[in-house]
Image 1: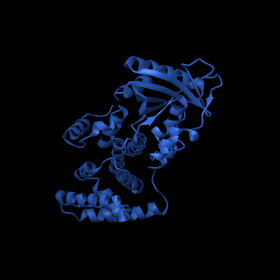
Image 2: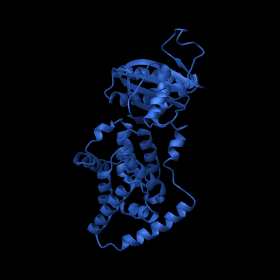
Image 3: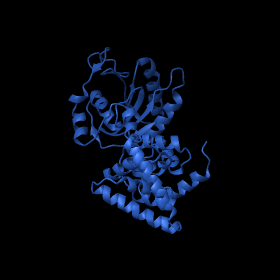
Image 4: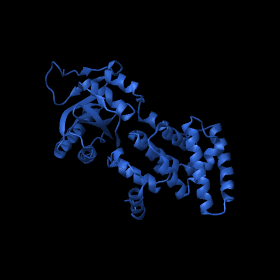
Length: 337
């Protein structure tokens, strides 16, 4: 499941809402059920889940999706299913019922496919014709406002995942060589305080250079990724990471260039930065890549758990302060089920 909290968009019709969803998520959903939550007339949150497989009970994932939305402090929601009616209808009904039980007002329940939308709650042919209502995202004021605000809607989730995928070719060869040099350099450091001091300097340089619009060299990236395997260095970088575009850009670049065995820390830091900025889908694909390679990495496990529970980015203020570190320590002591 992906959830995201993004700049607020005003909607005036179901067509506007359908046009807004790709910008709320960061990609055009398919075979999905999406809940768009609102305060008044403002869209403030969207959560997405995959459509249940045929023959499976749609109620458990529906309850989870509703619980995530209910934590956001919103007062109403619309459910939108993407795909054929045979797969969408049961999922949308289950999510609508689960939202009802949380006390949220369900404004509408829609199905979207092939450039048209249908409402499950409106039976008036004048506004909800049986053949569906065509919509043109390019002509929507909501789409224009989202683009003006710098929001992007990629073609699909695979395109989003590709943005955090490893770089190949000559980049991979150069990084393998640079990482070998970084390991030799690390072996020359005498003790833990020396490693932390080198790590603080490397993190400071990375942030300063990237915030000036400069890209790190291969040896700088390799040195940083090797140092980030030491938790005091990783936690120092975590404490300096926020939701700024430069932070997201830095950790994306480092993640994509890092050797596979060194992606856990930069991938988790990217997820944290993206989440702070309200880019929940970016955080999710970064964590998926980390956990596929390093399933026990504690920071990734912690962030993935919180993201799945729908924790609002605003609730992360102060992380990684004492409370955040205490949660992390508890997670380390408790084995994953």
